[in-house]
Image 1 (tube, protein in one colour):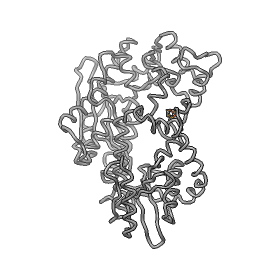
Image 2 (cartoon, protein in one colour):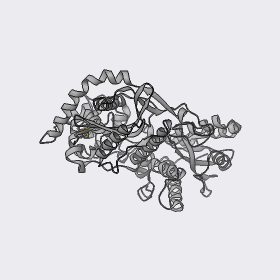
Image 3 (cartoon, helix red, strand yellow):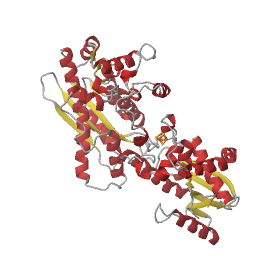
Image 4 (cartoon, protein in one colour):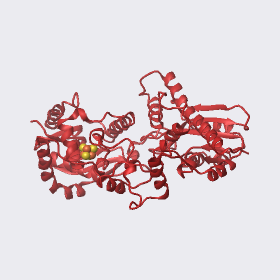
Length: 497
Ligand code: SF4
């Protein structure tokens, strides 16, 4: 029997009928999958396979390709007829809905369904997801006594061998599923009617484009939104952005500042755009510069945060440092010196990282970072994990200074920054000859997923080339800080201590 809806298209349709229609009728319009989204999918698959070990010895009902899901339905029926009691990817259809369940188990109480998620809690969407599965499976003749979400337990700490039973939490959602169940037949019929439509539903963009998931038709539906729009106003709440949009206000020059409530910095952003003007608060920047003490160290960290902890004493999704870059200058006239660390992905990097970091930071001078909360939190976590390094690491923490502040507080703002104070937007606005675009690795998420794939032995490619790419990326982050500070000094004509 041909199916019309799957568990994922059902959830897609609940989020937005247009998204369901486009997915079914205009699949080619779907946005390409970004490397960071692909890394999330890959991690989800890894977690799914690991969760099967909670119920070992099962039989796999996966199809030969995701386009041939009916193979799974046939296999599942065969396995059930043979009396199998643990089936992975058990797949059922009912009322033209197809549901592929991660794990189906029969114990002395009866059949139980388990859906695996790589998140750390159960969301409302997961309950709806479980409800469409329950509806399909029960109506296919399997009398489920329970249905659960298996998710990551973020309190688990790796101690010795990976303990699968501790890594996962199994949470029954049967009561919530039964509450939602009466709504399913109506929703299924509504969404089947959407698929039958002759033309795309007329649905405008809104908060549903990002909630519960980032929709993958944004490139199509958001085409009319200019590159720089009210959606880029810094720190403006989503409700307010859509309120402006719904008033027909798309660009910053269309905002009437006499009737629109904005913060002082948001007004500054709008005025900068409308008047094509930069704002430089010399006094504040001078004070910031005067507060810096040589020698200066410019420091940047890269981390991985795997769902499944890799190193002893770490938890799921804990940030683990694997790389840093430091540029340093002893005094105003001295040469810029560069030092770096990039871990061997086959080993726990932390002790080596700490030892080298302490050496490379020397004992005095300010350590400049961009977004202090990230570096400070990672260092404090290291202190917690390795208390024997408390004194030198704490002294590094106390020497940190944040180069993001002048931009976050809009002491220095140019229209090119487009409301952002991320180093990726600040750098081209201040230093035109330095760019991330020319690098093979252009962002931290990409660096992280590449290093994690090397650590997991799933990396495909030339490791030595990619290690150079990682170094290039991290080195640019700290060199960018050097150049940004130089520009601030030049602008205000200040001298450092
Ligand atoms: S981008 Fe928004 S409006 Fe367009 S299909 Fe997705 S959710 Fe619907």
